[in-house]
Length: 221
Image 1 (cartoon, one colour):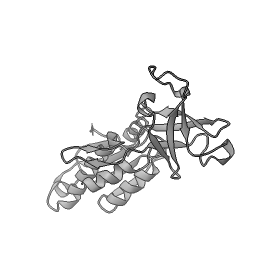
Image 2 (tube, rainbow, N blue to C red):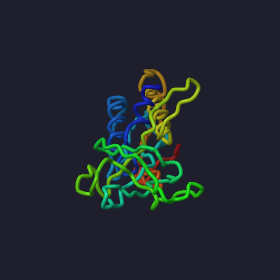
Image 3 (spheres, rainbow, N blue to C red):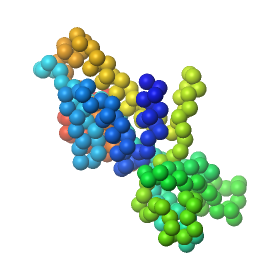
Image 4 (spheres, helix red, strand yellow):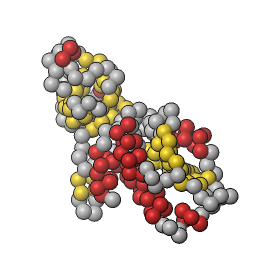
């Protein structure tokens, strides 16, 4: 399970760009459920059918994570960014992010700002090694996720994106256990269970709402 968690949390997946996480989950669960589909918003929905006549149950966990989006590039090639989800400027100074194409950026702070004051987004810049806007490997609108690797502290696991990839891991493990029980809940339960791995939660729980309208569950977890 820890190996699955490591793969999930280290995958790139800021809100609206969940492709890598979705592909990873789909690879793990395919063949273990009766139906897998992706909707227009980017949710991955897997259905495990019951024997019929029961409830429609939806188990939801979101794939996306907080990050930043490039708003413009200054004349020196530094990127200016805005938060995607609940990101605080104080927590990113000196930190790193990764874009979908693999580009790494390092956060810096305007040097004339007094260290006793909290930074604001317009006082921060992202250095990707460019010296002008023309040689930057990313551009306006590109999304980045934070680089905070998985660490196993025995009784605790530390990483970025635990919210909510740990929920995805729990849902996957539940699905796998259902599929592995020949005389268990997969064959005797009347309930249809929808496993929804949702998109864009960090910017307004958008994916879960869309998925719920699609599945029309009687019970949601």
